[in-house]
Image (cartoon, rainbow, N blue to C red; front, side, top):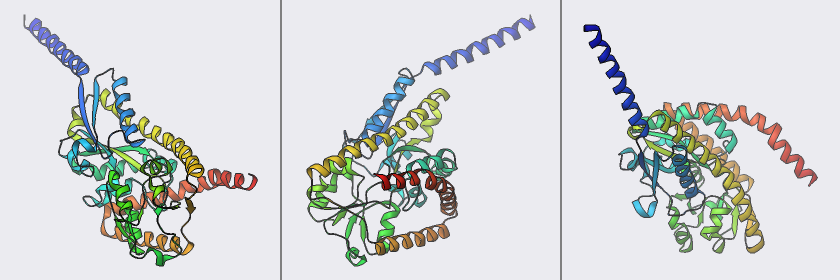
Length: 358
């Protein structure tokens, strides 16, 4: 009788556990995501929609993600705080926007004179980039994942040609991240402005120059109607957006849905890089054909050298002021040296060869 009771209790326990597991497996989750971008914003906004669609399809409807654009939540630069506090479960933005809150976050978007997109993805997923990024975000109840890359960004739109360092003195420019700090070192007055206000700021002379992304997104905002000089990039060779996830939300998801969400974020991030390449090529052809006023320029050698020196100085200061920053900088520098050596004998060599024969 005693053995029978023990067996009955064991069977009941197993059945209860199985039922609970099955119930959890069938439970549906609806997450809310806040994005920095406005509604139907191309490429960036396409990425969040693509991620949500993938997550729902792969989970057979068990994981749904509702997206609120900046016009809904009214806080394009408040995504970090809203996801941290649990007001939203997820966010889509750019890590360097949070440098005023957590200085070490700026290293996970793109760094001046740094890695290209493929090099940086290798650092994230094959090096220790992901580990370092989670160390920065975990104290804030957040997880951060790569959220889509633009590739090399253009250096910005200028009303006047930059012929020397003198032309940068006192120039007001929208440029975020570490690049803004570098520009400040050489005389520029940098500022950060929400995407929806950039055209008006340039048109009304609130700023003298604006850096946004590249031809595809720049053309849509109409900068070519105001500024004639379009400079090549140096400051963001691999601009990576980010998906933020509230840690408590993540912990509530069963393991299979965590895996599905991670996969949906990773696939949509890569798709954004591909979409960016295609859209920029299309837009650049449009600019050349329909906007002959636009002139492609490179910054003069003395300007480049001054910015390069300023970048090295600021990195040294950042490393001295934070052990965590020092570890990230050391990791990126070491990985860049290793991966660039191969890039030089492969991609760079190929492009140089083609430039000679075309």
